[in-house]
Image 1 (cartoon, rainbow, N blue to C red):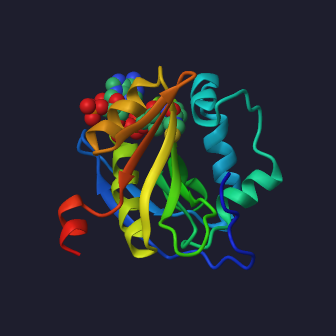
Image 2 (image 1 turned 90 degrees about the vertical axis):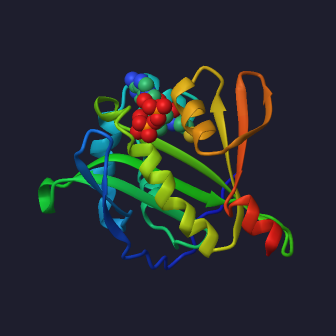
Length: 192
Ligand SMILES: CC(C)(COP(=O)(O)OP(=O)(O)OC[C@H]1O[C@@H](n2cnc3c(N)ncnc32)[C@H](O)[C@@H]1OP(=O)(O)O)[C@@H](O)C(=O)NCCC(=O)NCCS
């Protein structure tokens, strides 16, 4: 279960240009309430397989509730970044990375569920890697102790990426691998 963004979500102004491994650049910025149409476009460009890997099932459309849930974020308990190209009306979302903090009792470490979707034609270019790199400072800033993810065991690209970024396997059963990454580097955590 994931936390819903607070009502009256304020969003965030974050935006940066990052290089990809092929030498091109994408903008990574905070997702905004006015991204609903762009997000629908992004979803429509995902293959059935990618949708299945992202949502763990068949999902034909994003509902108005999904769009609100995914674009109206408080950037404390719910953080979402998009990788885009183009500008203005021509801006297009190539990838989305987000985390939602799990509801936990006060005083226990904050943990968040992280997930990504990159449109099929742009997979393998390093976009999800860049999104994760940009999500980590948000997690540290809002005192999220660990990012966690459930990944289908045949999703080799996602497993490879998480492994390369330092995620450890916490469990694996019924075809789903549970992974976890402390948001602070381990050395800093020990000396803190
Ligand atoms: C998993 C996913 C998010 C990865 O996004 P991405 O932008 O392609 O990821 P990156 O390019 O940063 O890294 C993917 C790794 O797989 C490798 N790869 C090889 N062939 C690939 C291919 N056809 N497509 C994607 N990745 C490929 C990449 O090279 C890279 O490994 P490397 O760093 O050793 O080269 C993307 O494939 C996707 O959206 N899949 C469907 C949704 C999904 O599975 N979400 C995960 C749920 S948490």
